[in-house]
Structures are given as C-alpha cells and as structure tokens.
Length: 89
Image (cartoon, rainbow, N blue to C red):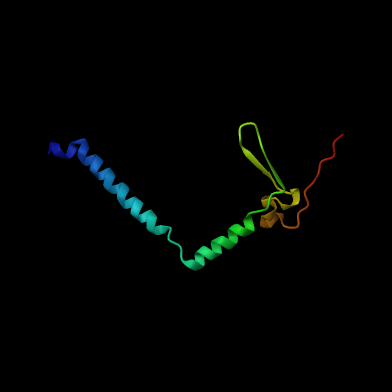
C-alpha cells in the first residue's frame, strides 16, 4: 500500500487533472460565426478614437480621448449626463 503514497501518483493525478481542465476550457471558448460578429460589433462600439497620443520617458504610450467621448460616459446611467466642472477659487 505504500506505492499509493508516493509522490509520483500524486503528480500523475495532477497532470491528468490539468490535461482534462485544458481540454474543457479549450472547447468552451469556440464561438459561432454569428457570436463572433456580435462580439466584433460590441468591440467597435467600445473602442473610441483618440485625439492625440504621446510617449513618456519610459516608453509608455498614452492615448488622449476627447473629454465628452470617454468610454465611462457610455454607461446607461450616465447617458445624457453632463460632466460637472469645479470652479477654482
């Protein structure tokens, strides 16, 4: 009965679980052509064109979006919402 306690059985069990999990997740993400088109339409509506972009000294690129076309304003509760500008004293 000591052969069941060896780490090789446990590693074999883990490898089998991993392979079964990988196969199940690979099959779960197969989209039909109609679903693919719908996803593409949703992504096109989310992506906003940027006005300008710049790189900082570390090489990170920042894209500037128009204030009124920010993706946050696409939320249903923020439709027809006007941003409030705080007056400085």
